[in-house]
Length: 352
Ligand SMILES: [Zn+2]
Image 1: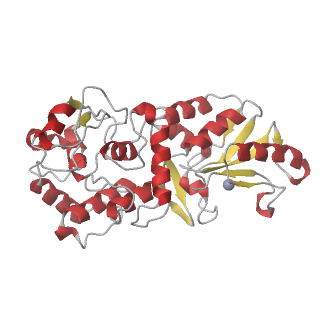
Image 2 (image 1 turned 90 degrees about the vertical axis):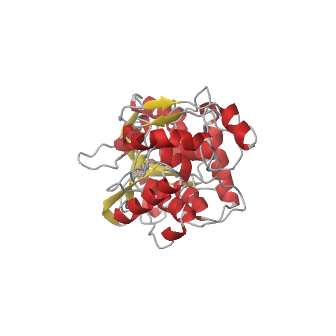
Image 3 (image 1 turned 90 degrees about the horizontal axis):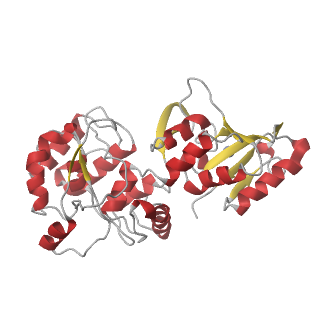
């Protein structure tokens, strides 16, 4: 989907903003238009220039450094499809009974077409860059709606519809991690932050993942035919994608999650002092139900400096556990403090 040939077109921020009286937003944006959404391009260009939607994206001469918008259509599934369904329910009264189930079926397609027709877009039922830009609804602290629920879903901090202090901190942390990509640290989910959340941001995370892949002091568990092992998670992240994660107690189900930036940084930093084997990141369906593994916020170390982690070499694992704590991990378990962690060190960064 990300390999689809792109058509770029630019609008200037000044022209678009001047015509609708919005405050100036220094963050630049580039639309990328894909063929799957191209049917609507002719109509949508006009629609966008008339600022018919308060939530649409504007574009500028320089680029916000995100990946291209993902394209979804009937048959698609996953977290982003849940987001589409939530936006549809907010935009369309007639979508009140539409299920937020993450499956882009015939009912979702009908509502997408209805929405596109309402906005004067080509009603092809495909959610590409143009449709995304019209669907987005900006949210901030104090808001309580399905768009907020989608934000909380992305950060794996529950499915409340309330924009809480935790939501605001997570959003700000995300923005801080992507300042170099063009995000401002506001704690609000503006259109640029939405795009970074949905399309993903190459950069720090990608570079760290590449460095980890090429790091001789870090080995990653690689289980043939299992899609959510440590190696898979880092390889996907190195491509600018979310990592595949297991779902608790559901051996055949998988979903996607973004790996926590401080965790990746810690792996790199730790490798300067120790060599180690990462046995799990997003992991397996039998971690604890609310495990940080499923949130992309935890990883396990099974071997340190060539020695397996056991109860008889606690000094070594405790030294690594102290490094985890110093790096901000607040869920640090090993042979020295937990009977369930006799053969590995677990470092997790729970949302604060
Ligand atoms: Zn663990």
